[in-house]
Length: 226
Ligand SMILES: Cc1cc2nc3c(=O)[nH]c(=O)nc-3n(C[C@H](O)[C@H](O)[C@H](O)COP(=O)(O)O)c2cc1C
Image (spheres, rainbow, N blue to C red):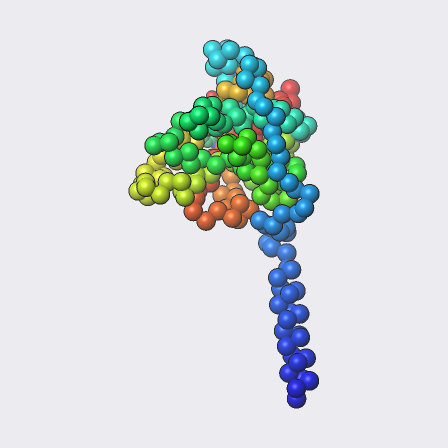
C-alpha cells in the first residue's frame, strides 16, 4: 500500500514537471532569458551627425522598402537617443516631451537576436526575450526584410496619477513625438522608416508580458532597398 502511494506521488511530480516544460503557444520561453542574451551597452550617440534640421524636415517621409542587413550598434544608439533619450542629464529629461513629464513611452527593440527594452537613463538595451519576433509583429509585407522594429508601449505604471481617460489620451499624444523623432533622425541619416498602427497587439502583450500598459505603435527602421 505504502509503495503504491509512493509510486503515485512520483508519477504526479513527473507529470507536473513535464507540463511546466511544455512550449508556450508562441513556441518559445516567453519572458525567460537564455544566458547568451545579455544587456547591450550602446555607444555614445553621434550628436553632431546627420543633416541640418530644415533639410531633414524636407526629406521626412514614409518609406516601406528595407534591406535585410542589420543596423550597426552606432546607428541603433543614434536612433534610440533621438527617439526618447536623455538630453538633459542633470534633470533626467528627454528628447521627446511627455504630459506632466510622465515619460511613459517604453521602447522595445526587436532585432534578430531577440527583444530588448531601451533603458534611456543608462542608454542600454535590457534583454527581454531571446527569440526573433520581427516577422510575426505584422502581416504587412515589408516586415519580412526589416532589420529592426521599435515597439512603443504606454507604461501605465508611470501614469498612476492620471485618470483612465487621460492615460489613453496622453499616451496616444506622447507616442507621436517619439515616432516623429525617429522619422526625423532617419531622414537626416538617410534611413528608411514607417510608423505602423496595424500590428498584432495581442502578440506584443504576450511577448512582453505587459500587465499594466498598452501597445501603441510599431516602427520598422532599416536601410532603403533602392
Ligand atoms: C498613427 C499612424 C499609423 C500608421 N499605420 C501605418 C501602417 O500600419 N502601415 C503603413 O504602411 N503605414 C502606416 N502609417 C503611415 C502613413 O500611411 C503615412 O504617414 C501617410 O501615408 C503619409 O505619408 P508620409 O509619412 O510619407 O507623409 C501610419 C501613420 C500614422 C501616423
